[in-house]
Amino acid sequence: MKNRRALSGIVGYVLMIVIAISLSILVYGWLKDMLPKPGVECPEGVSISLEKYGCDILDKQINLTIKNNGLFDVYGVFIRISNESKGALKYNLRQDKRFPEIYFNEKLIPNNTTFIENLNYKDYNNINEISIQPLIVEGEIILCENSIISQTVEGCS
Image (tube, rainbow, N blue to C red; front, side):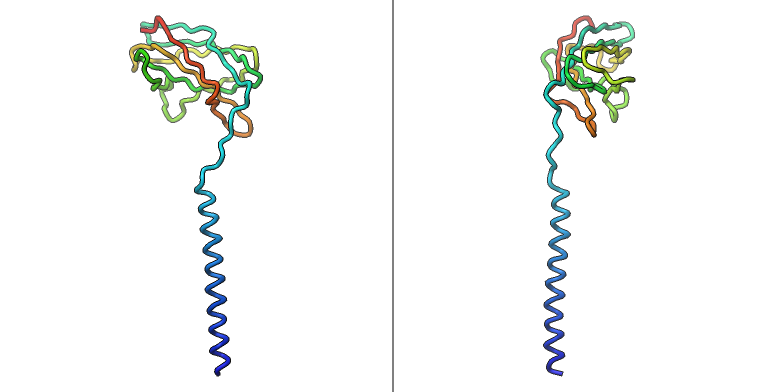
């Protein structure tokens, strides 16, 4: 009887250690998911330019011609506008704000241009500046922070 109590005490300690180790493994796994993961960066050599633009001031629409000057295929762009002089770029030209990127029908290969038409800016009245950020795909969608272009726009009032 005396040996049984000693054995049940040892089993109790072993169970506590197993539970503590199991909890620590669960907490480690949870914390590992909570920590920010290193972001995938855009490779050097992604470059676009705004070749030309045209505004329809009656319908409040802008058409853009974008050229890929870089070394990589561009799959789309993220377009923002400002209607304040020297203000922050704050508006997306897409009607559906959940999906602000514009994906091209075909990827934009280096040294080619694409035409984006009829982007509506009625809600903003006018445009003073436009900012375009390229979007590439390398296993996942990557917005290129280091390749954003900004240009002052005239004639879109």
